[in-house]
Length: 533
Ligand code: GLA
Image 1 (tube, rainbow, N blue to C red):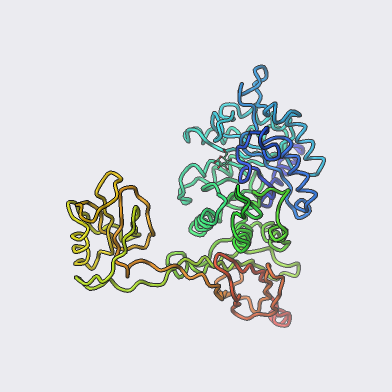
Image 2: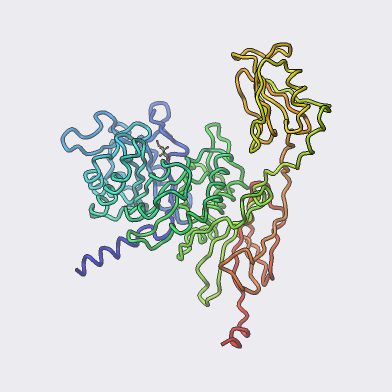
């Protein structure tokens, strides 16, 4: 009885804070050509070099502790050992075997994280764990695995049973193994419909919710918007104290220090700082997707920032969210995100806030020109301006461009139109064609073979402003600091502190896509506290 209780108590210590590590997928993908690319192919050499770099280049000291192997590590043919039916590493690329690689990590005080899937094969087409949960969990435990990412690249109907079976098998494997479940990432993007309690009951310590991150700002920005939109629905399900340990939403890998195939940074340093701030506030794991052998000093400074890491790893484990309403362009342009932190030893409340300059609201458009007066048109070849919410306001066929222009000009609801005279041929103004009248041109240019666009020039949105902005945080916005008096504000990126700030704080010159990342600590008026007592 005592032993059983002890075992549960031990298990519940798993992933009490969001995991910190490094994963191979973002940069090395499924590169298995070790003849051509010996330094970067998925092989024991690559993982050992990354483990060495984690220790020698300062990552381990900063708190990054696990080396995550992703897809494509396995022997593909035959998919399992013919006698034992166990999974195996590719014999050419992992000649020493998985147990030996795990020992290598453990000697360096690092954790061994690997990858499988609840489908018959992984997303990259390698053997996976559906119907083999018990055997595979035991095998991972024998190898000394400390963390398993379980992807899903097969029928979603298998997931409810499969993830539960793997959770049970891991619990029975005799080893503490952090369990990352990709199930919710394959069930659509509406976070309000996902059964988070089930993932927790199945022993998942974290789960991927949404799209894979890619090495560019659009991808990173869209993940931030997703968490901004669904923060309130996600927040209750993150925390340190589940029956099987902590449970966290995984926003996917950090692009900080990551490079494209051409060696250019995935995103700018301002954007890297934004990712670090939003991931820390959101209590998302900090799993790097760079090449730890080659990370610039500037990116390392972001990854190693002890205050940013302390926000991520705050022991209270309360997930932060976007507090500004995202329903208007103005609110989206300048966003406030915040996370409640554990109080100071003497009981003063603390929070972290990110003032994120998302940008993106173009200047307002003038009204449509009066009916019959269309002084200027913009012609775009093989692409047309798409309408956002107002969508199409009509359709036509058998008209020349001039006739369609006359019809659109007569209609003050029409901003322009797409025009096709068929089959991918270049449009000729004299030919009759068909198309759609557009209610606005707000959704940007859409490329389409066989289509041109004709748009009232006045209705084409201008470029969004790119200048830095001053951003003001009104402290009343942060619920966990309600009723606080003066606040000490520390700028996490510059290290500067402003003491005893009343009501609001202004961060000056926040660059586009950048973030002012602030640590807020209540200054308790000791005399007032004594009087109140
Ligand atoms: C999916 C996952 C990625 C990665 C690949 C590997 O796309 O979401 O994170 O593991 O599979 O094939």
